[in-house]
Amino acid sequence: MVQSVTFEASFSNPKIGASGVMASKRDRLDHWFGFGSFFRTARKACGTEPGLKDWALMRFKWLLMGSAVVALAAHAQGPLGLKNGEGMSYRVGWTLIPFVGRIAIAAEEVMGGTQKVIRVTTTTATRGIARGFYPFDARGESIFDAASGRLLVSSESSASNTKETKTSMVFDYARSSAMYTDDVRPENSKTVPMPAGSPYDLILGLVQTRSWDLKPGEQRDELVIFKDEFFKLTVHAVGYEEVETPIGTFKTLVLVPLMEKEPPKGMFKRGSTVRVWIAQDQRHLPVKFEVEFSFGRGIAVLTDYRPPAAETAAGHASNPGP
Image 1: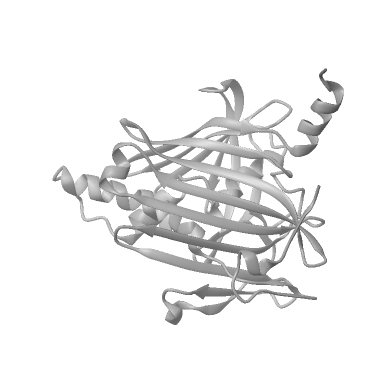
Image 2: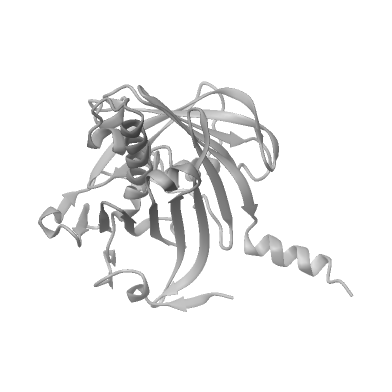
């Protein structure tokens, strides 16, 4: 059953026009800032704070799964990496601390006016000892056109004991531009030129790689959104590895995004490394993500998975029960 909703339920001042869906974006990237802020706080408490700045928080955002890599720049838009009803949950750890937070991703098919869309919700929160140092909660929504798989709108809100964010980005493919809106700091709102390609946000970009069919030695270009900037990345398939998770052991393909098509900036300029492990089975689940910084390593491991609604319905039909 397809739920009918209006974009007003999730975004401020939305409009649907011939050039795309207009609505709001950006806070979902601060999911990653929250965890980075926690580690900065913890390091201060331990007397080991090395003077981290916003770029350190920005880099950890790439760990929390998501929108790190991906949006197709040199390829036609392919199928969305998440299906209606599908969900994934990840345990996040940091260096020697095995559990500092969780990431949950869920997709559902809804009606945005007369347009069928896929709404992907991402929630991020500190847990365990991390929450004692830095209580943080965030929620992001991305709206994709169900027919083309294009990202139309991305929005995010977050709250911690020191900061609140509420941002959005709306993509106008006909005009090759994106409207970036910061509701908390309106002076940062602006129209941003958009490079050729169909972007994904940071977290969902990593998930999208599961729809690719790369082999070791192959690569694929992609366009990545980070805050109000676009990053041109090249994702390399480097080899196979076995990965153990709470839901099983998987043979995986390791993917590494690099910034090669333009001068490195942000985390790539500072030598950070991002990796994602894609299971080599029928589902191709992204079972692990890793971001390595000069001051530590963040790892997200898949702990729970919910199959698409179509598979669940098919299973019930084949096993109707008494």
